[in-house]
Length: 411
Image (cartoon, rainbow, N blue to C red):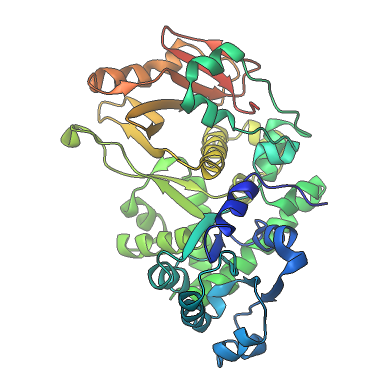
């Protein structure tokens, strides 16, 4: 059964304004399903293949496009890069919005070329796995994050309700966010991730990157999953598997280019020498991270050493999904001083900074706000909004003079 995606309205606006829209994201997050549902009735659709030259699109892209009316959906366009130049020539002659709707599951090569050659003609929309609101099938006009950025005081006063979710927090994190994983029985989830990881490594990685040892790369994926929600240290990544730091960096870029990993830059301000400048990295899907670390069940996750990191990963990815729906998204950073003070997320928009701390405890306390207090003290000249601790608590709470706690599943 199709679930509406929160970025649908943004997708429609883009298709009404630009001749080419590219929906990008990891495999099996629902890119083609979204486009087929929104535009399928009036659009042709072609699914490209890494081996087969579908309809001779690579050999003769002009003839291929001649054989299809617009709007035209081209799925996994990275497998037919020759089509991009032909699309550019046609769009230059006719700038009608919504002509070509593309999907891609890797950021190298084709998508980079597309961004350069179709500049001003194409707009990109990132799609991730399901958000909490999509799972609960609740679609507010504005996400809790957008309302918080617009007015923390109004959110605090209104005390937002929690979403009605079908499973517990630990089970949701263990299942992850792939659409397919939401409908499967618990005992079938590991089978799904085993197939996903095998297909990803043996197909995507083999085709897109020069990785000679796929077995070691599989171990590298498991290691990165174990280091989710930590600062990136390429030397440490390489040392654990007997790789050079350069190889570890290149392989991490492979994961990032295929949407399996992302990083958040460090906020430096004017204290560059006193601040850690390392980015903080996150595994794309908490369910896949649990599988990679052999976490056998939702109950096992609760007692696992990775529980806090997996919960932080879930909240950060949820915030990214909220940001993706916003027309004016904030910038995202993390902050850490060498003394140890840190804030998990700093959002910046319109000259205002919004510190967010993420805790896996259901009972937040003043102690959880120390990092946000240190941030204010380090940057007294900045305009800093009330701090927010996102955690699995039952309701909104004030936990210091300037800081509040909010349930991670707020509506």
